[in-house]
Length: 308
Length: 259
Image (cartoon, rainbow over all chains, first blue to last red; front, top):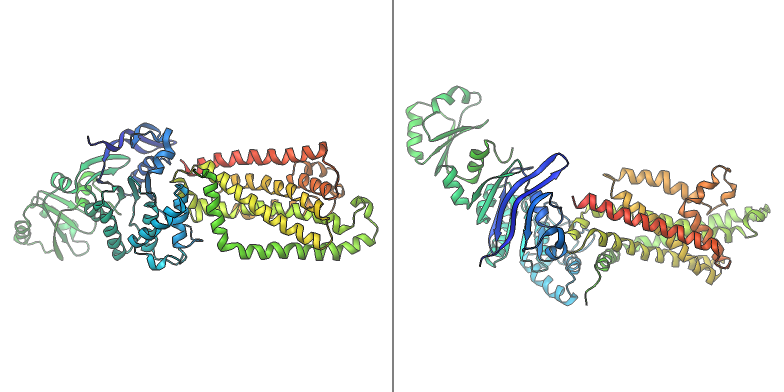
């Protein structure tokens, strides 16, 4: 039977009056990559900290590996690999010592850690930096080292809180490649992100969070099919003109969304929509046709962009 | 056999020290030499010549100073090793957060950290006593026996300072702690002159300061005065402050990092 690694029912986190997570339900199954997508402050990180048995649950129920974090925190944490949002490497230690010290926290025998370090440094593409101090490493390297560190105990479940935030595009792609390999090896991943492309690349299934609640759930493909059209036509007008023409755009597409800097037309037939734009003699400065993404799903569900 | 979790935390601190020991060892050697030269011999000659030996219980100033300096230095070491490294673990490097994502819990972090501070205090104590003995300021056995009160005094500061640091948002508070707390205590707790020289109303204040208890005990033991009821009171006070400080530290670690 497919037993869920994580089960949450009515999971709630409050800080005084402030509700960070408001009664969410979800299941994470063995072997899948599960995503929490949402803007900053949606409650993703709070949810992650509760799963990580670091932050106590306010109310509702949460089971990780079938265990209650309130009773079995250390046992749960011994089977997790955690990649926190903010770096927490010991910059006074070398690359390999960071892995070594972390392995000792899990009480792994020294000889086991030494073998594991070789393997993990190769995986993180840091073998030639093993004796170096951590401080001068690039942001991407530090992230890879943090992921390697989280793998030292062969975790059954990895928690990655915004793993690529703050990295340049190239470093993000290297990291995605590493995470994809983990997925191929059957490691269960839970990822929070506010990047749609990241969620689409990595997640088999995800929930969209907004204002402490889950507003939709499904695979990236399902969500796009359910909440948006196949294609999007983006129109940009010269400064100040958008307000004047917006009424004349209405009705061309299934749905029209006016953003501060551009107009989005949701349609299943971009060519027809563009022809209609020309027929109505609208003269956008630029026209871009693209596939719908999770960004559009989010915009539709919440009326706001993911990243402001 | 599994290693107790606090010892795993201790091990990581010890490993970090491998990279930073050079700087700290140099100052640990240099400080007592400078103090003993300047205060013990330089100022001490003046003190001894003016015949104030009565208020120093008949000791030469160098002999009076040595145990006090040992304990006052232990206080400084205990306080600063519980300030900056704890701020780093919580805020600057976040290494405590990293540890708490593993089977390690807050109490293990606190215990492992204080265990490491104990090791540091022992190192400082041994080096100081060795140098003081070379200066002829303490007898060997008496000097070694003074290491215990020094370590206890260091811990009686390390534990509450750990609790305090974990409640501070920034290092500004730490600078104030040293400027208005540790430095005055270093000067006025009886290391450099007997607290009987303080104004009468101020003297009782010394009784609630761990440093005074440590210095009194260290001086008794260095001089070979056998342990009596007063020794039990001094030790009891230092242990109690350490225990309360440790419990407070665990609580404030929970409030800070497991919310």
